[in-house]
Amino acid sequence: MNNQLLFRVDWWAVLCYFMLVTFGLVNIYSNIYNGVTLSPFDFSNIIGKQVWYFIICLIFWIPILYVNPALFEHLAYILYSIIIILLLGLFVFGTTRSGATSWYDFGGISLQPSEFSKIAVSLLIAFILSGIDANLNKRETFLKFWIIILLPALLIIAQPDPGSALVFMSLIFVFIREGGSFYVLTITVTSLFIFILTILLNPINTSIGIFLVLILIIYYVRRQSKKNRLWSYFVMLFGCIGFSFSVNFIFNEVFEQHHRDRINLTLGLIEDVKGIGYNVNQSKIAIGSGAFIGKGFLNGSQTKGRFVPEQHTDFIFSTVGEEWGFVGSFGLVLLYTFFILRIIFRAEKHTHSFPRIFSYCFASILFVHFTINIGMTIGLFPIIGIPLPFISYGGSSLLAFSLFFFIYLNLDANRLS
Image 1: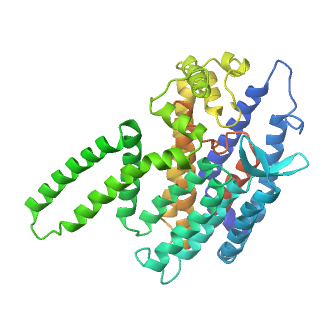
Image 2 (image 1 turned 180 degrees about the horizontal axis):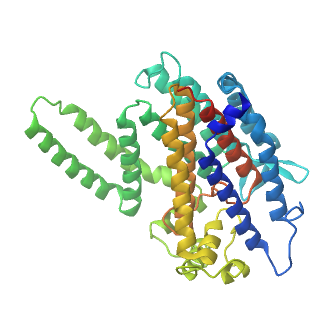
Image 3 (image 1 turned 45 degrees about the vertical axis):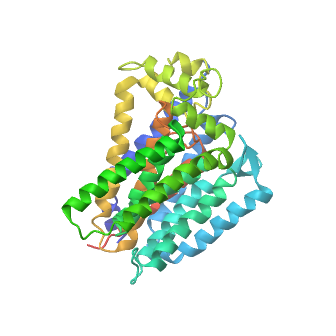
């Protein structure tokens, strides 16, 4: 039975995992290399810590693989409750770094509960939606789904760490896949568009634009069928305009100054290459200097000169761009793309909804992490401080994503066909 389980393991995904982690270790080593060979097992340096974190991950792999998959369903509520308690405990026992109280410190070892909350949320969502009577178009299931997501997200925002909380919005893809109303995605995208447009323009100009667009939509709809109820469009009109006029309050009163600065910088409203825009500017210089094939391992001048802050964590992609060039960067993007698509394709083969939904949660969170992290290093997205999965330095991130992956492997290997 054990041998049969090993044959059913998604070894292509395992290969992707080892390639990503190994490539991460190589780039972390390059970040801290100063001409003196460093021991990969010395816990006193960054590369040594990451290697030991990886070893700890591998210790968990086999036990998790051979766990009865039904146990994950039974533990869903318990793990979610533990995570909520840990997130609440941060406000009393947490350690503050870079303005966010997001860590527990245990004598040199740190733990960030928000990283593990993604697993707990995914397990509980999969458990709730795999119920016999689960239907996302029912009010009860709809409310449960969003409460499960919003409760930890709000606690993480309060730390404040809005970047980690934003990742939970990736689960809207799971919502749509499992039969939820497509209008939720439409409303989310529309709200984001109006938010950005209002910042770029102003509430009055944005409202005029919304009014003209909806008038054209109403005119088109009425020409197609006169049976359509116009009142719903007028509700949309007033709702969108009302949201537009609330954007300034949200932007100025809810967001902190450094968040506002980063959004303004990304939208091109300010230019500050020596201040708030320094990280992104240096990251873009490093990536651009790598050209087509890169400068080579340990040969990145921007990396060696420590010109990019946080380069071993959130901005590690700038090392990839500088030392491995377009070829290495594009190869990394292709590897992530294959990995995520592999998870999705395998998820669709499940006959039971719990492993399918969990796999989709994993793929969605992985996709948003990878997209936003790379996007912010090249100036497409604001800097929100989320790591590149399996690549960036960080014990909590590596351990959490590894556990996420190992649970996926268990559920996939025990697939009923």
